[in-house]
Image 1 (cartoon, one colour):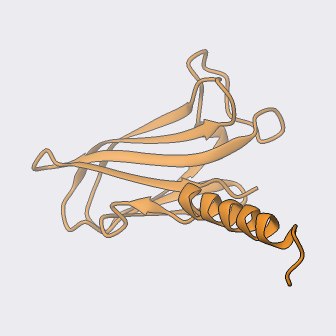
Image 2 (spheres, one colour):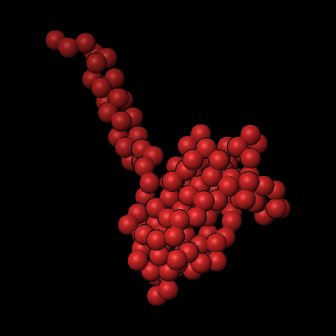
Length: 128
């Protein structure tokens, strides 16, 4: 006869595991076949692998909590072009530069439009 607490504990563990899988594990998502985003210690590297030029590239660092995103723009990114953007190039709406010491970042978001007008978006967890 099984112990009376084993079944509720098993259900609780299964629920927690299901919740963790539903929340996502921290991998990149979006149009990964068109934009490659990598993060180094001091910069975020955006690589256009879409086969077309990208216009109005917007790179964002999303902090934890309700504060505004830190953003920077790239006017045009040619096919095969790789651009490194320093963390200090990202600014919030008050033009305060991003600093990992003062803001806890959670997500990197890169969005753009190709020359045909199709929207492209990639999200990547921010590595500390």
